[in-house]
Length: 184
Image 1 (tube, one colour):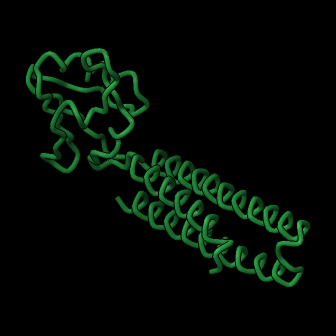
Image 2 (cartoon, one colour):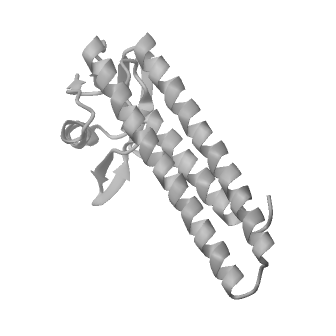
């Protein structure tokens, strides 16, 4: 890769990382602490990530357990979970909060797979937009006579190869997650 394509490669890597993070938050019937990554709770007047106000463990395959460091945080954590899009009601015994994940039925698995494919398409669109920005930038450089027409063609081929590789990675990640969902 040339120096001119490096910044665009970095942007594509960031898009892939964001997609991977997004896949980690998808609830698939097993308890996964990452479904709580986006949740924040008011902690002394500041919205704080849930992981910073308590200990999150997986005592069983389909159970997440949240043990707040301060007992007065139980109610705010419960409320944050109920207000979120996780779709699970928390249960509490006054000391810990438990989230029990139900088994996924066939219909829900297909809906999750469809949702993942849509998120994959969004990730591919983001990567293609980066490619478009790169090509536009290269054309501006050529108009300013900072690169030659041959350099422009070479850069366009390079950025297209990079785009194809990143889109193939998105497809692979989407396929792997879809298989994981359908096989549970």
